[in-house]
Length: 142
Image (cartoon, rainbow, N blue to C red; front, side, top):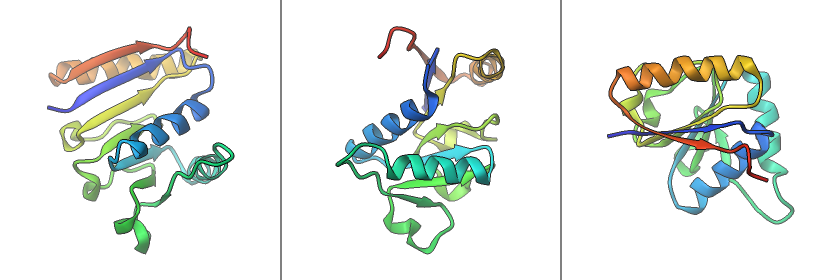
């Protein structure tokens, strides 16, 4: 069954998401990162390229020709069916139609009330669907 991890009270969501992507990559898993729109996708891609002085987090947009050889895919506003079986890092306001398509889903929740409200609704929806949900309060994390 798909495991859902909510990381709440995240002070710097983009930095946290880059670190999460790096962790998934280092574990040898494949990852789909879903962002709300093309501008967010481009900004996050740049953040991944510049994350750390010596680290490399290989990624591309999911529909590019090199996607088959790239462990981390970025998608704007969609949950591609071809990503089934991957870990998903959800940075969009939506949730996938079928969360069970993914091996694990990471939800990053910032400090603002808007993202908290979206996360609460999503949490209830996952719970109603019977998923295994884990909560990680990151308020004390550096």
